[in-house]
Length: 551
Image (cartoon, rainbow, N blue to C red; front, side):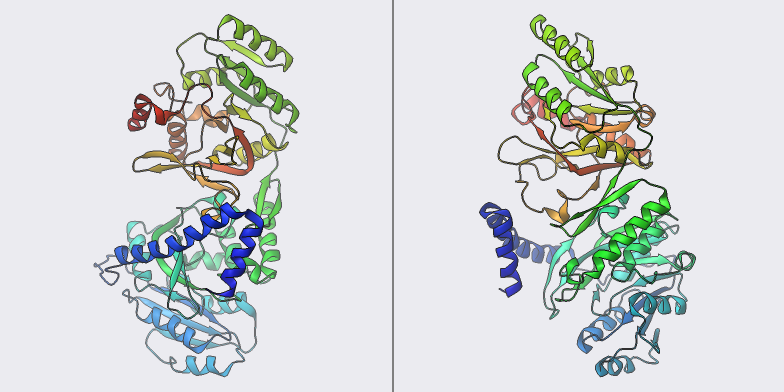
């Protein structure tokens, strides 16, 4: 066990407590074994290739500076040994001062498909990379660090993706970490398909990526002054030019983990923090978006907080029946903890008894809510659609009556995100009232049916990729707290009333995805969900459990 690992463990114990510490030790031990088994199962035939009809030249650009000779050799050999042979390797020495670097590069001078360039002065990563891009003759350019290693099938898989769609301008792959001695692989990063809001949270595309050369030229390559976040800044600018972005869901890149590398930690190089801030702020300005950044120390990332523009009205639609005490808690917490004040409440009651109906009427008067009494069999979709028809706001927030508001900016932040043009539905992080356990942190479309990510896991630890900390695009967010523009809600036809109880939010989110919108989880909006107070748990009813099979 390394000193760094011990230090990380003690930090976790101090910050997150014994339960989190034990859980992370368990995950570390088992993840290591599980990943080794995964590699054995999924990487059996990496050298197998089939003939491709489209075989563009790929220029792999590697800026080199004062790297260990053995690591540099491994890097170069991993490119030379690719199963796909239509490539050129461009090695750009950025005026290294270590003699071993030049000795290593000399061995490859004049080799087939290899160009070695020696810069006359040290220009740092952006200038050195741009030197390589300028020398590239390929249709696509792949960027690689001089101490890392490509999987033998990396270029082949990239080109196979291009054979599925030659229109792609940018393709990225999954990756893992490689120990400093090159003997062990760990920490696989299985990435989502293109997710613009996830990307605004963190540079997740990273390695291995290829770019269309003409687009790189149009963008002017990497920008000087963004060293440490130069790739992040590049993709932020690229996504403003194209949405033809692809993802190869395979581990094609092994990122060397060294003490001074960002593979170990973003804060290993403090200047990266400043360059990341600058890249994000400039992206907001270029796009004409109103917002600000918040530093999240736990994950060493900046959150983008979009600020509402033009003060639009939000219509908060709450379906409820015979649930007065819980509803009152929701209303009270909303009244006390809502900084954004241009909203209306629409309470849709599907048939409370006389006593509760009177209480609902009094509560609605007290909080200036619209009260719609519609006796009918419970149908969440129909009740939400009724509320949407009564709404006078430009944005709709569907909210369960068992939600307890926490944090004054909750509505401000949901609305700011909902105003971004590509946003479909916006969800929040919901926590059970006891034990700080996660109820909702995004919904996954699993083979067995839709399921909540990290359901029941304690919320005082950093989960996979910070998915309970930073903001992510998810296929689905729960209807228990879901904001959407009224225009987009009407565009997809609202909630499907043939799904009266469950999975109506899933169906709505799928329709938004099909229209090209992205559904976003705002983890900075954290609320308490007193789930199933009124209707019980689906898992305890076979009839309710079967609903999942209808999607």
